[in-house]
Every structure is written in C-alpha cells, then in structure tokens.
Length: 239
Image (tube, rainbow, N blue to C red; front, side, top):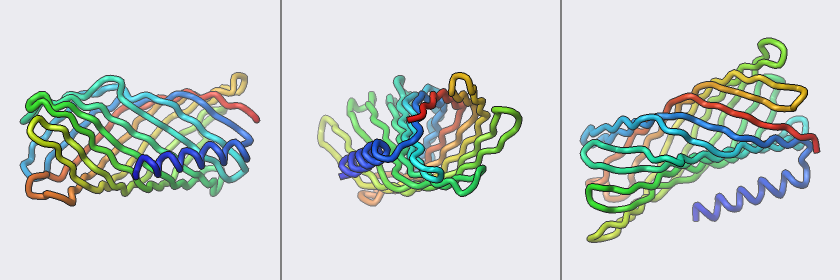
C-alpha cells in the first residue's frame, strides 16, 4: 500500500510539472552522514561510521509562488552495526514536496516522506527491510549574503507509518510501527549566472524515533540520529 501511495505521488509530481512548469532544475545531491541507533529497551547503542548518500535532486517552478521538488538519496555502501549483533545496513531517504513561496526569503512546504533501511544480520543469517512512508512538512529560509551567495536553512518534521519484515531460517516475521522525526539543514550556496548552475555545501541533522505497535514485548523502540556534511550541484533550465 505504501509503495502504491508513493507511486501515485510521483505520478502527480511529473504530470503536474509537465503541464505547468516554467523552470526546471536538475542535479545531484549528497550527504556524508553517520548513524547512531539506540534500542530503548536494553540501551544497546551502535555508532556507525559516516558513509555517502547520493541521488538526484529535481525541482519544477510552475508559477511565481508554487514549485515541486523531488530528492532521492540512497547509500551505495553499507553501514555496519557491531554491537550485540553484526549487521550490514543500506539506507534510503526520499522527499517529494509541494512548495509555496511566502516571500522572497521564506518558503513553506508539505508532501510525502519515505524512509527505509534494508539489512543483513550476519549473526543469525537473516535478511530484512524496515520501511515507512507518510506526510512531512516544514519551512525554509533563503538569506542573500553577497552577490550570488546565499545562506539556506531548512526545518521540517515527519510522521510516517511502516512495516518491518525479516526472513529468518526458522520463521518469517512482520511488525508494524510508526515514526516521528525532525530534520534540519544549513547550507552556503553560490549561483553561477553564466552557467545557470548552483553549488552548495553545508550540514544536515536528522532525528527519528521508531515505535512498534505489535509484539512490543520482543521489539524495542528505536532512536536514530543521522548527521553529516552535505553538497549539492544543480543546473537550471528555462522551459
């Protein structure tokens, strides 16, 4: 069901943009982030070293006030959990948003958020996926500093619903959960007028709490903290 919802939202994004878009920006974005995961029940914590997230960044400005954006990140490499068990994890982070420009400096946005991680547990030789989708919303600020240089700030929250499935040698398990979280980023951006290219670099922090709604005696709620440096390079086109 969640994948169907994401498919519908992606379809709306592309169809709406194709009909009404005036400006298109396409590029690549990255995040070099570490991951701290804590199991609240037993206090077991894993601090996983930074790895690279990378993916496309697409934006359509289809009126003076309205635009749509899509940012999809994934980790080509895998995180390594080495606490009470040994696991390899690959993470995904996707945002699809409709933006409204309140003023030259302030924008509000809302849309869909998808967070997931797949994993292989080397200790018990099992594979699983933990994924969730739902609404997200926030506010962003653009502050001109000097000619073609800007300070970009972003604050947002999420409330998403998901499922965790694990294929074990003895049995398969499936548990539902929900997640709440917050995200903040700060970037310094430089626009190159002759090339219509924007370059940006900064820092991003994300905090997510996982609450299981099934088999809570055996499943421990989780706290996730992600933080690290970001970069962005996009090319703009007038359509």
